[in-house]
Amino acid sequence: MELQITEQHNGWWVISQEGKLWLPEGELPFGSAAQFSLTGKTARQIGEWQGEPVWLVRQAMPNHMFSARQLLDQDRGLFQLVGRGVQLSEFYRSHQFCGYCGHEMHVSKTEWAALCGHCHERYYPQIAPCIIVAIRKGDEILLAQHVRHRNGIHTVLAGFVEVGETLEETVAREVMEESNIRVKNVRYVSSQPWPFPNSLMMAFMADYDSGDIQHDPKELLNASWYRFDALPQLPPPGTIARRLIEDTVVLCRAEHEE
Image 1 (cartoon, rainbow, N blue to C red):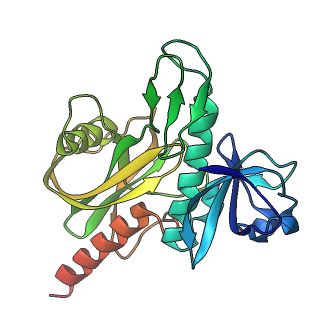
Image 2 (cartoon, rainbow, N blue to C red):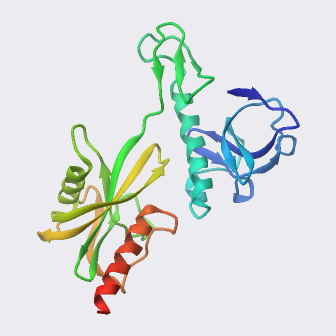
Image 3 (tube, rainbow, N blue to C red):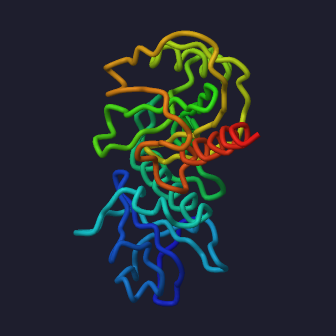
């Protein structure tokens, strides 16, 4: 339930608008509402962290608005709560009016939803399912530099699930489209909420089956096989991509040392 903040309210503050997050001094603010001049604003509790409430305030601040990526190296639980706040803020901003009848919406008091009082339509935050997959070939792993990554980072392949696909079919299709290779022995590893802007990453590992790499230039700057002990610049710790790479390295090293 949304409420008006008083001087007595205390905790962690997720202050977000248009996918950005207020990070004064580069960190998620913690303390009293009065300390951050939030008295009188509207907030909603979205969870707890270290025994303290986490509050979502849907507004922009005049400065220090950053991407939630700034907090990737924080504890996973905190990052997920921040991601929830950023996604909810954008969901409510984009659902001010009903897509069916055009009337003004209001925020549900009991769940993460936006409600239309005119036609009674109910909207929930939509999550885009994605796959991300580490592909192993002997003691090598397939890594690529994505078009959107201009900082030298090489990572594993990923893509959105399409209508009517299983996750395993998405893995096979995305790998073929982006690298021109076929995979086998696809197995699920883990998942990670990814608020950029509203994805759920489902991670897999797979083995090389056949084909020669021909990367899709619309998606990738390059793609190549890298030996497990000679890897390029990798995604930051805390990302599921980094975990997949590290898990693959463990497998490669174990077989190499046999």
